[in-house]
Image 1 (cartoon, rainbow, N blue to C red):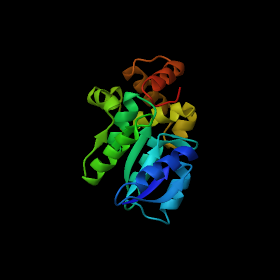
Image 2 (image 1 turned 135 degrees about the vertical axis):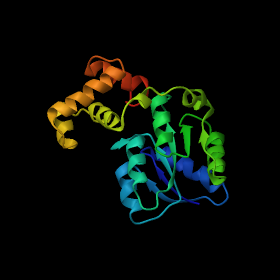
Image 3 (image 1 turned 30 degrees about the vertical axis):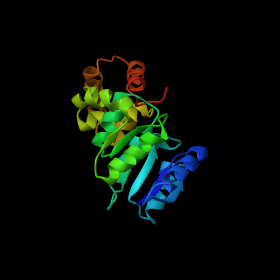
Image 4 (image 1 turned 90 degrees about the vertical axis):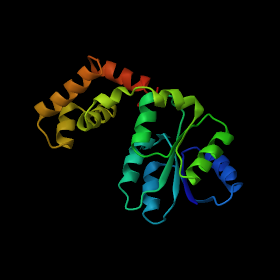
Length: 203
């Protein structure tokens, strides 16, 4: 299995590579420090699996999961995350991650994830199992409302959101109002606090 590791911490990448080299049929062919480097490298080199960190210097693991899904032959993805936010876990799975592994977990847990992937089975760290089984507040949002939420989290104004989606300011404002109503928040500050609480925004 040809593997790419995308993580901005060199020591962690070295540790992952050593772990993978001890396993049969595992070959690390790419080591990248950022998500954009990963996307650029995959245009030239094919891999079967990407081990992707959720916290990247140029975006989140979820951002790059969305990008990877659009590739002609998308690789399997294991997402590493230090967050126990339920939204991240649900979103990663909905975007097609075959495993979600706690970054602070043991090497044995990552080995279990890799073995499950080889057997075409999904894997979630034990610490996350209960959260994944629970309700996801974001499920009540429409696709556009989730896109608007993502833009707000990244600091985009309502006008910038309207321009990004090629809709009127009033339409963008309506989407924003509806998502805030569904999440029972009443200001951007409360929305950002919600995003932190569910793991969509680093603390």
